[in-house]
Length: 74
Image (tube, rainbow, N blue to C red; front, side):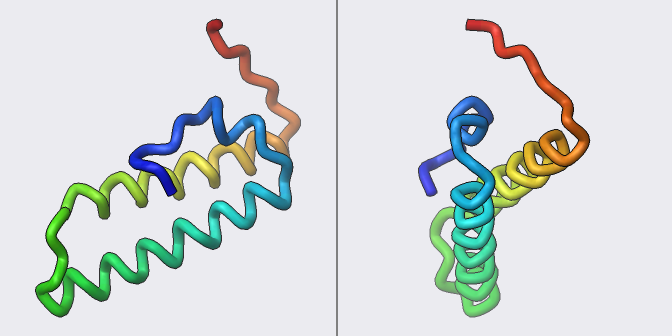
């Protein structure tokens, strides 16, 4: 995942790609937590970014589930 995925980028993805992105982010979070526990983590801010990306993905999935359309300012 890039450093801080934008919500607009995620909105362009279909459901399968969104689930794949979620799986990838969760795997990265697991690896970062493992590095933090063993003292090998250099960039602690990355943990926060990955958690926020996961939250964005869950929010977008829930919006789609509820049929909520959001208007992006161009």
